[in-house]
Length: 80
Image 1 (tube, rainbow, N blue to C red):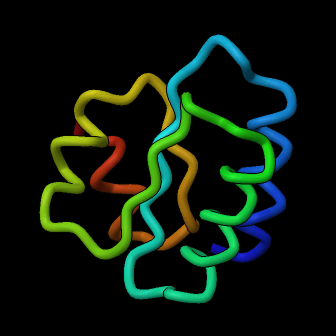
Image 2 (cartoon, rainbow, N blue to C red; image 1 turned 120 degrees about the vertical axis):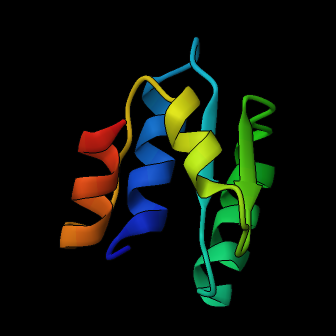
């Protein structure tokens, strides 16, 4: 996701009462940056994932999904 690490950092700073899950997929650089951000802020309310095969389960359990605006992702979220 473009600017994913910036979005994560702002969410950590402003949203203290929510559980944040971030799936980085195959973007190893984003995952490494996200790990550093979480460690820097000691954000125990954040879980990071690399590529996973249970994305549907996470989206089904979420109240809010922030994603790239690809048609497949948008349709998947809308169908939930």
